[in-house]
Image (tube, rainbow, N blue to C red; front, side, top):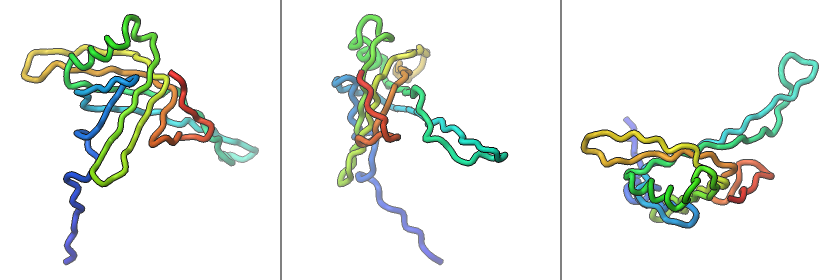
Length: 155
């Protein structure tokens, strides 16, 4: 019987504990999760056939970014830094995942704007925390854009 060996990743894999997160140059701690998506919506090229004969490069719509904070204090700090009328301001969000002996992975979201910051507090042993949900115009991963011609939107 063949023995399956799994790689030892403890201390070497990219992990959340080594992630550096900043919003407009302000380092933020107490971020427990980031969720982002900006899918490409492709179109069909049709001819006289029943089925498509090709596809377009597609286009990207506004993306959605949700940042989860472990404490209400950290979430409030971000909103306070944006100031009055925080839902009208645009900014940049960047974070870097690090691992010992591995190349960093850097994500950047440009033209970010707060859409909601729902409150869901209750009694219990968990600290009060919460989300900030935003839209964003473009993003990069390690400085690369998902499409040619896609650039970092200014905030």
